Length: 91
Length: 198
Image 1 (cartoon, rainbow over the protein chains, first blue to last red):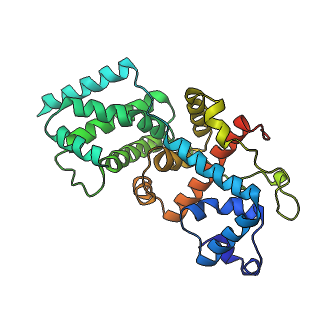
Image 2: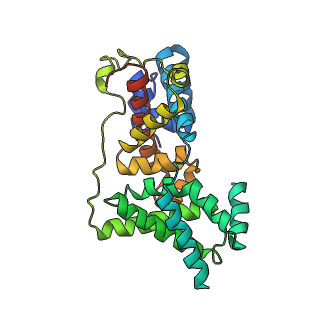
Image 3: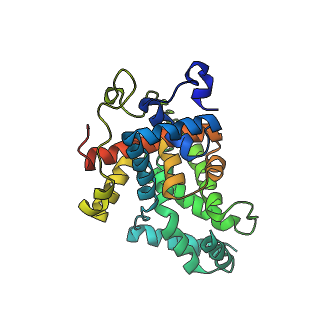
């Protein structure tokens, strides 16, 4: 349940920007109620700033997903190769 | 992930190269994750080494009810948590408050300092190395619980169900942590790339 549905007096009006930024993840996760989802999208239609904000959150997620694993140091590689061989010797 | 399934087969066949591949793929993320539970890099590395050994020893018993990486991260988190508790590391206080500074909105709740544009610029103006450094610094600056969720969800690409499973948290809690973490990461990018308030 989103925090908006716990605030019934807010339900009748549209969302303001400050509320929208708090709902972005619930929106992207599909966790908003159908009515909140609709109000979220209605706000975006009239608000270029929040549209930009949502695009930036999506871009942040995309960039995070492209972070490559960091290279291991040679010492770490050696340690882990040793670990593997010790394990093989256990059986 | 299919690549992981074939790695698992090769690991079970005793293929050392498969182990190296797995290590190259996950070791740095595992260190990053372990660091949020324990006090030092050295302890984190120990926990991750223990995890690799537990993974190797558990290969025969692993029933593939979860993906290989979910299993890997679960073992890691359990060990790191236990070690962190033994070290009596204090639990960080949950941060509250808005994800975007309230001073950026007027009394009506509308933007007065709207987000600065940076998306198209990001990859043109900043080279990939610098961008990675920015993101890693941003991740490093997140509170531990938020970093764990963002690392697993957004960097590693686990599903929300997998993250809840690995970290033993509820979907709602996961969403809150993810929201706060992602929002701060976005702010870090905006601050560096958009020239917005720092």
